[in-house]
Amino acid sequence: MKALLTAFGIAVLAVAPAAAQTTTFRGLAECTRQAAVQFKRHDPAFRRFVIDRLSVVGDKYADRVGSQFISTIYSGTATYEAASGPKKVRFLCLHGGVGKGPVFVYALPD
Image 1 (spheres, rainbow, N blue to C red):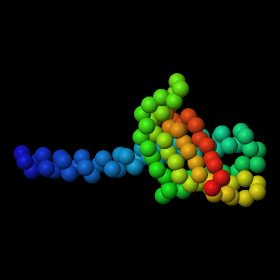
Image 2: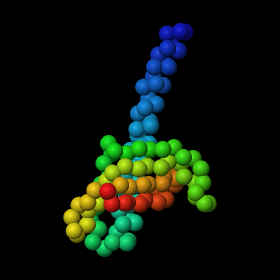
Image 3: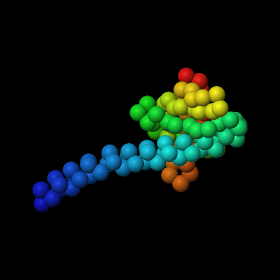
Image 4: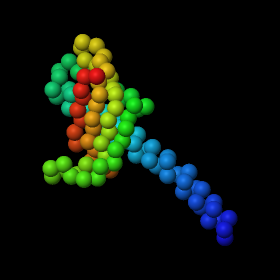
């Protein structure tokens, strides 16, 4: 019985980081898609937005901003490419959680 509990504990610890990475990856992919839609709406010369995943910090927030629930705030660096060429920017993505997706993406010149 003790060996079974130990094996179960090791399995849970092995799966937990993978689940967190999957959620973060999905959240960043959703932020990238939201950014592309949002930036194209405001800048007709916009071509693409690529997040540097190694620079990303995900802060669990789990509170409301106005009437909108935000579960995680992602921030880091990204490449914003428009007709004038690619530029490094700092980005901020407010994510509403599973099922809701990103509610706001913003880019600042680096």
